[in-house]
Length: 75
Image (cartoon, rainbow, N blue to C red; front, side, top):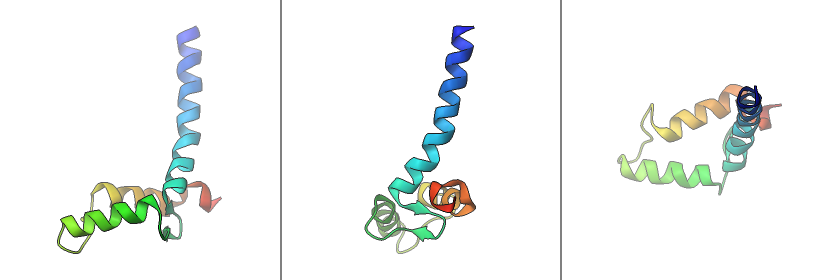
């Protein structure tokens, strides 16, 4: 019973923490925030890919989640 309760609490915290972490990193509903960790990640990805950010990559996926309104900035 204690393990199940711990798992439920951990899951609830994760659901709340992920949107906060994305917004804090700069992945917002309105796009990547200027001078954020997300902007630095996007820059590094673009340099590595010859000037563009690859679809389906980490940066694109995180921004899609932020733009979908799953980040705290959209609330």
